[in-house]
Image (cartoon, rainbow, N blue to C red; front, side):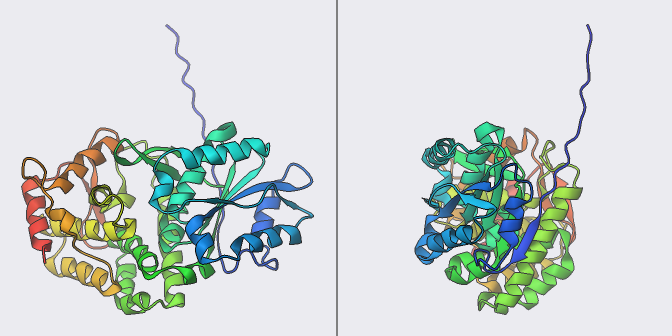
Length: 383
């Protein structure tokens, strides 16, 4: 028997740009990104827009077309921007993926062409997944337009689709070609989406950056009242922490079992499914953070005062720390949310690995959850 041990590495680099009014013809950010590595006279691009965003900003399609006309010397918009269903429905079912793949084929885009997705995390996931499949991957540019997408979902290396009764059951690891965070898009968000993404800021601060956590608590009222300058700082800092973890964790494609950036998410994903996605991701994460922080307190990992500060900070921003779904029982009378632990284990790759704060601002990975203690944590959260 002969064995050849193959080994190689592929470096990934992509810019994450923070700006305003990305489709103003005077803003060069998108034009510079698309024209940087073009192989022909003009960079060819298909643009996909979140339907919810298009409804909120009815002039957006015309604005994008105007931008490409202003930069027609180097850019080509291959067809009128494609409007796709947004929200979590974008990730449920395969119709959207097939439509994007068909459009890519019809317009004869190649591996040096671009797919630009403008919208929330659901649309970014769906379009990114489609783009990663055609020709084994087109150049994908994300323009996230929600707080959650700008500070978390839009800056990472994953694309996920819901299937088989599980959140993100299907997906690919496909780093984007570039990310452009346009803070002007946040102005159009309804309050639910404005504040929902702040849960991801609390998530990463609680396990990685105590000073940032204290900043969030001090500025909770400003965030709830839609202070744009404070939100811009929160989005950028949260994105930086996520990007730093991806770059330095040693496991950007998650070959191991640890998922520190999924703190609070085992319960959040389960709650989203139990609510049929009526409970938004950010609000579900806030409840998951409250639950896991309470469990960590019961295990002696964080002080009661720190746990209470977490709950007060979330609530002051307008985020929930409880959901009636936590009280929903299965056929055996057990909390139905606890089924999320087994689903999370399967998603991780076989070994349960749950991130908890120990102490506030740092983390520990645990491989076993005490169900009686978790049920006690649910009871302590109950209003």
